[in-house]
Image (cartoon, rainbow, N blue to C red; front, side, top):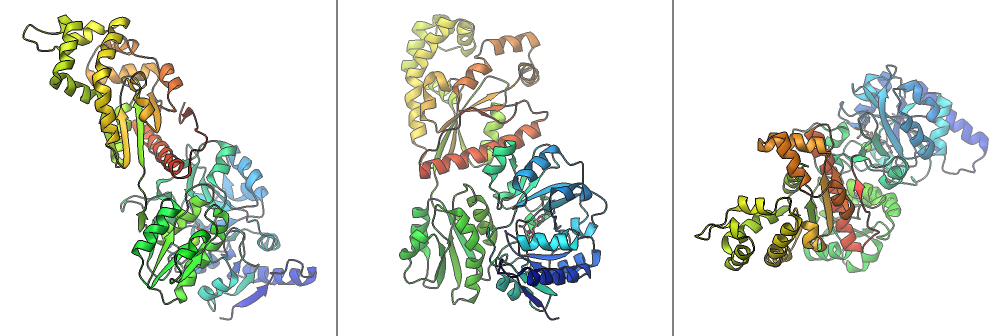
Length: 566
Ligand code: TXA
Ligand code: MG
């Protein structure tokens, strides 16, 4: 098959010439052919979306798994109701702001969208590309164009027509050259069919820009980590290897100085390097592709895929790449790099993050701690350290015995329950006990916190704020929950009466107190435990990422009191 080439790079080309080329390309599409088209993100491999056979050929030509659905490219938001059902108002707010542009929305489909396009799902992905040639083509065709990225399945996407030719020459009917893609990574995919908007793929529209418009969104786990083998991804495309260059790729994440150092330490003469402009000189004897300055992720996005492809023709045996941080377009660049590497990622610096957790009984603190442990973090249980001290520290016992005589038996054994009763509901007694205990406990806890040299550690302390331990934490989190929920939980957990559960809660500090004094609040008002766990995971992942970046690049303005659910 001959692949026709339409040169539409020159936007000033005389109108008639442009019109002729566009109507010719549209004619091929109308007749069921495949045409590669330029968009602002990457080149797409287009077909008439309502032509099942043409769509089927896209899968054949790309070698794309049948269960990976395609994006419908529309001429504007006025086409949404033609192909989508149950469209939430938020969808229009988003399209008004970001279309035409690199934002794809997943919505409920209408039945006129072929199963081949959606791979049998009851949802459909739609976007309106911000490229004059793509828009002119869709308008001329009068129908949506279904288009995946125009690369062979598994390879880096194409950001120039020449790269499309390398993958597709002789396999498709035409290619429209609209110049190099302005953005360089694919669109951001946002799923609006669930209870909360969910990011399925980071891309050309930064998460921050979306959140400014519609508030916090959930980040699908597949965005930052490989999926466990048995898990079904929300977006079928997430389970496949993507963007892979021919050579094995290793990605180095962390502060740029640290990653550059780590790369120099490990590289061999035939290691190819992808690095930020500032670090090129460090590798005078290597084959190097730069992707722009460290602080300009938009430039890195533009140059990333070409850099990955460039090594296909080299004498190198492997590639090492520096990874940007996740701010702005950096999230998309890092995501493509990590996937291209099959998640072979070297963490070049492991930051020490200390989270302080506090809150009243029954609110869900232990659930949050379990999640932190599951994330690889350690937990410093201050209550346990306290009890250990009570058992072992003679001086502490001596002082307590002087102050709370009745809690001790004649032979000097401490009855903890009695001690609790002595201070229960008595403010000055409680303060007295705290004063004595903190004097012994704090140095021990401080020492334990100082001994954490890297990684995540949660300090679990009811008295986090009163003891002053909060000052040793990178962030403090109040775990709170509505009163009724707490009462029910404590009754079930400890097998106590409702009256006693209420008494115990009322003897503690109020949620309002914790809320006002902590940096963040996790409000456990979710309908189910599963939902709370999910929300907490997302919250913690992002908090930790943010704190790590803060440590690397200096503090940003500290966000105070972010509530993930009210
Ligand atoms: O920027 C872009 O989006 C480019 C240009 C050409 O528009 N297109 C693109 O298409 O990147 P593709 O096929 O390479 O990636 C589409 C992604 C796949 O991961 C697919 O699984 C996901 O979108 N997707 C499509 N329909 C979906 C749906 N109904 N639900 C969830 N994910 C969907
Ligand atoms: Mg693709």
